Image 1: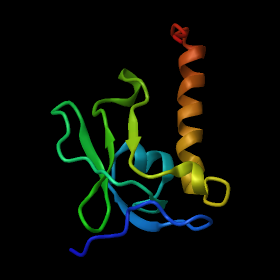
Image 2: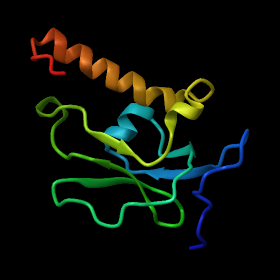
Image 3: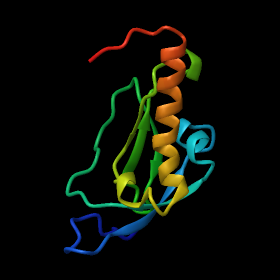
Amino acid sequence: PDLLEHGVPTAGTQTIHEVAVEDGSRLFAATERSTLSCSSHHHQGVDRISDALIVTARSPDGLVEAIELPGREEDLRFFVGVQWHPEDTAETDPSQQALFDALARRAQREVEAGAPVTR
């Protein structure tokens, strides 16, 4: 596929591109979307991931855009990593805000369950 522009945008602009999300992933559960419009500005990408992780989203040019620790959600801490900047568009895009909301909900459940708080 053609390569997308992932680089740093000029001041006052954003580079937005589509990302395909794997059904059944935590990212899909958080956003309830199989395609996301993402603000992207980076000059590096993931080449190889650990055998312990799975790829859960890619851009149309094949770049890894999200990774997760697989397993049952109730057995794991919240572990979702994204290559884009959800904070750039969270105020206007509910699917991006949903990432932060999912993390906050999980943290609240951990606290309510008596999980130790680490700093």
